[in-house]
Image (cartoon, rainbow, N blue to C red; front, side):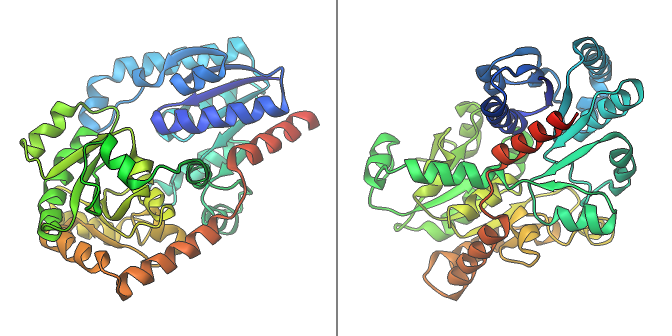
Length: 383
């Protein structure tokens, strides 16, 4: 079969590459063409555009690059029609992908599948109309989405398991490096437990959150703990230097987030997939996300957002397993207070670890990529 895939960012590249490998297990003659990244290219096939040429975040960057965005979108639509795949597989990235789905559904008979569904349960719920009209099969990686799509909107979907849970489980099976060796390799202190700081993967997130995280962690660390930043691979060491200012008490490791979490006592984490990864490594955490105009954002969060929580951990659990410090609750003092409670072997730490166990149970043991590939193959065989 011929498969066309579209991934618009690094996480989509990872998940799409794993799905492609799983498809090849079912369909050794699979032919891939895609918008994506290096991981997808490693699997094989023809890359039309790298996702770095697509990804513009925020109102101003999007506005400044509208001509490029529309040009890429037109190229993508034209290329799909010319390639005429047996199936089009969209991976997250809804702003771009839902427009592609609308066009392909209207102009062709190519089946449109969506792997890693858009998070419309949090924002822009009206998009369910477009999804219902333009997407033939939806593949979800979050268990609570089943209720949202099927019970609330009467739109059947496939819950295939969670790829992040798969990736963490596979890593934990293989990674056996002692902390002493990890510390030597990264010039850390092998005798001090780690306070990990995961401040996001974009410069604006890091700029907003990391200074507060560092100051809060210093309040807790004293001479007993060491502070280690999980450096995002796409961000230069020089950018982080502007926040550490040559402070030897704050270390950084790049491209080793899972290794770092394996050896961490507690963490401060910017909201995102990192909150779930931290939970799956059983590292107690405080989730913190600085926003502009905090009181206004707090009002909007309360009255406009469709969900009670911002972290995947709490969304999956459907209860406050981790503390979320967002908008008007975000402060250096609050971050430090939460870290202090969690770092000791007390009730707050044990309660969070118990909540993590419930999250793993909710996610289940399905292998997301393999399960999705099986369904895609079976659907293709029916056609």
